[in-house]
Image 1 (cartoon, rainbow, N blue to C red):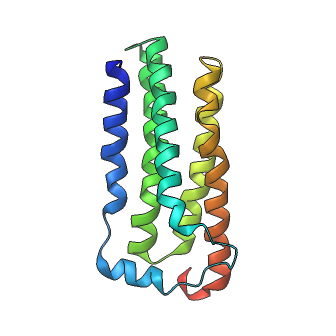
Image 2: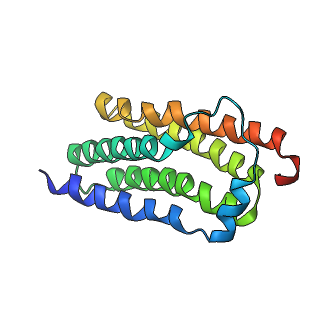
Length: 157
């Protein structure tokens, strides 16, 4: 296994741990929120995000291996980093601030940044861009769900 996959995977994992920056009182707030009736897949969301982050790590490793250490590659790696930080910030920011609007804004930013990274990566590697498609599909779903929850919980905006 190439060192780039291990290093990028480890960085991804460490940043993803940021979603655990929540307190028990944050969890009790979110449990009281009403959810759309169609949100039957909520227990699978952690597994879905694990898959998406693994795909993102693989995408970043492919890009890194195309031109390791170049200035352009470092800039693209920073784009991947921004996307992950915005994505991981969703849970602690939404819960800590008790604001579904914050979550919606972070979700929209994630969609925008995800599209920009995919378009940047596409000329370098079609496979790397393809690995970002799960993120591009799932992030709008999560953002839409959060928006629906605002309608169901007007006091949580």
